[in-house]
Image (cartoon, rainbow, N blue to C red; front, side):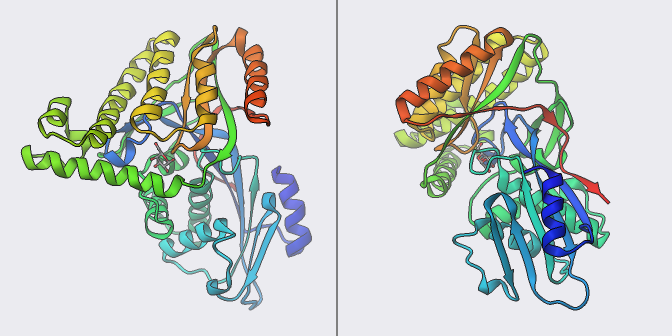
Length: 384
Ligand code: GLA
């Protein structure tokens, strides 16, 4: 939904006065560095041009009822107390409650409307976009002076403490702190980052959305995080100074006699961290062939070693990695559905998209969505 349509809906539902604050919160893409953030490693995300808009007003005139609307989902909630909410159905409301909870500066009942053109459940982190955007809106209403980095850290607490997903900080940092036309090379242990250009002349980054989200994601995601933790505990028995897989090397994995499955998971994380550094070099040199090889290696690692892919993702990544004029592609985000990110030669783009759509449709009976994007800045207050 466009912002102007949201404003029309706002005025028709809440009356003529415009929202006290409007925030644009982008989605997140990730060039490389998957499942490395909660292992204190490196990632290379950016904010995308597709966004959520979050419109908020304090309720004036003594009304006590919250009134929240998710315009794209056509859902509306009016309530006095959070206990009244159907949180298992309206997960978006759970994220809003979480943001209000961690913000710890109660503004009383709020009118909130969310909507935009960010696909939901597509692995572009619409949930972190909602939480990050709302935190900035709350900050704008209260006049508090938290930095964007502090808000990003608050946002990641919502995921861990309220939602129960043992995620890292990648999505929140990218959504809050990105710069236009750049990706962020983020060190998840030090929480420091530098911006680099991801554009290689003659090529384009594109997303292919499988439009599936397999239900297991939450439990599998936490299981992977737990396996990495378990591997660290075993390595620590033999080697000192190991606080995360970030501190380990291949020799340590071998000498610690990790069980096969933990070895595979840890080995992937070590290699993926290395690939983030190699991608930085490839992008600096504008070397699309090298960048493509890294994407391909990352996908195979996620498919076979870390085992977080699925048939639909594998199908599209396989096409990307075996089509002339496409440098490479890999699943993006937590996995089990969502998008494949591809680096494609400009001259091949249209043909590749057509072929991907028809081959996927033939295999699965429905079409994937092609998502073009540019890299945008992070979350911003756009009004007042
Ligand atoms: C999800 C999480 C991130 C990150 C990715 C995998 O998007 O929210 O913190 O772990 O999965 O790289």
